[in-house]
Length: 267
Image (cartoon, rainbow, N blue to C red):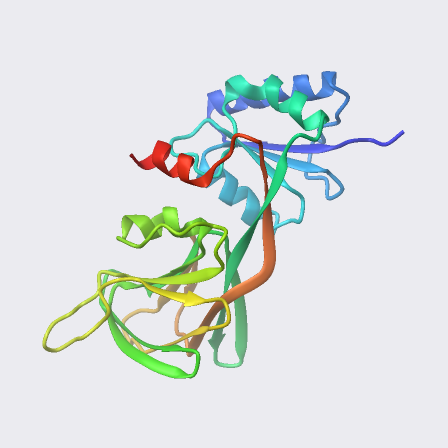
């Protein structure tokens, strides 16, 4: 007999933990096994919380190929598919296989620091900025073309899935996740007689990589921030941004529509 395993992870708040216990009981009553720790052979990962909880789970387990389902007990919940009062309906539809899998592209950043190489991955976005609140200068190339010497707080490179997150709060465009593009959005750009920078987002096809050469800073280093996860570097020679081969699988039900969710969450 095949054991059907489902991983469940929840925020630490009392309500999320209560929903976790309730969902675990319901799944076990329906013939599923809920392991006590992460099972690599599970068929589904359920994240209970908001978008932050989902992203933390994704990074903690290094972007597993197992599909995710989000239960929203947080605030925005853009990635979360169901609410706590829909647990029974979810189990019914799941057992009947009445769902779709949405494959979301991820962005990666390759950092060169001397002889060392570091790779970071994000579902929403990856940011490069100064380690402290000071202006940084970035020499930015797209493909083989040098574009600008950017001056400001930093830049954000996001996927279509991430266009509704930090990117949107910076004035970037919302992009339908069925498109395969990267978006570069400036963070507090300086545009004066002394410094000239793009002040709006730039949208790129998947074939083009973005290469950034930060100018040296004696007083402090840089931060690479992937989906809110901070990584500090005392110096950086080069950062290359592009699409990763990794995709994140989200479970979606028949009623899911991206633009309906955009309207519900933002308007």
